[in-house]
Image 1: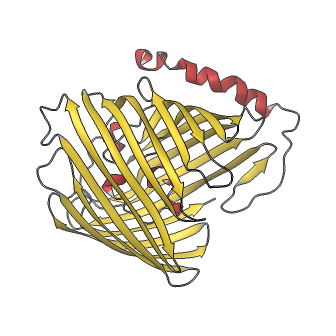
Image 2: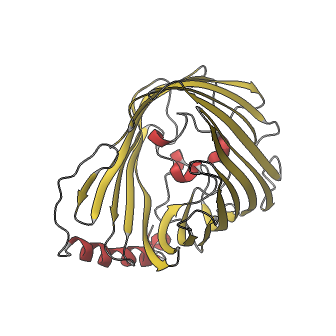
Image 3: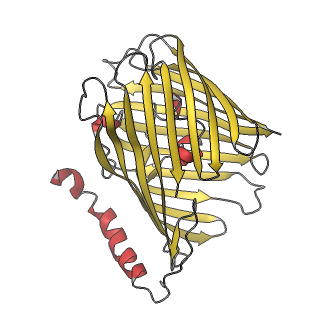
Length: 350
């Protein structure tokens, strides 16, 4: 354990002094301003988070009612150069379940999801240092259950790339929205505070890439991703992807597609190319109720057949920060990635 974390003590050192200084800053005076969905402001800091309770009832295999996530965000805006952000979560904790558990699944895990600082360089440029979510597609960066479309996550949005990176990112955002947003990122070593193997699919030693987001309107966008990574098994992956969101009146279309070329230690893989994509449609019946569905085709590196999944669901929002989702997923071909069955969730952004 010491050898794994020792090379990344720079990350802890980079945050300890700024955060302590920020807490002690003279302008850090309490402000009673709690708002559901926004959190609580204390001086230059904001405390917020979200919870997500899920019911997973697949036709075959393990069924459960779980605390999928209980996350806490702490963000600070102290100076242009000092804007720390931390997200920690309790995840994968079963209240009840059927069948046997394997590899610690369902026992609950404490996870450091994000830990970074943003330095405003001016001119629309920001330098981010620490552990963060990799900007591959839109879903991975949003990721919080109350903000995403469905309880079941399409495989292409998380299974075939490094979801996290520990290193540096240079971000560019044009205030007028007339120029595309650009993220360039680099992870030189292993991920800091890696997630337990019971809740992850792969571990990566090196990650680098870029994401370009083109605003089409206030809500509509088109994105392009590239990522090159090397995992702990020696598999080198070069990924290219595209994602989009487009709204017409009450109807919203979303989608994401990726293609990966695999090299290096690939002898144990079923294929040396991996690709997939999903397309979703949602329809707002009114301010509270909506219907949604998505179709996904995913060709996983460890299987010889592609998975075809079809999902239909309904969402109810009694408040913009609270959502209940009920959905059914059906495998219609290939080796399943997400299981056929009924799924539900109750999510709160607090």
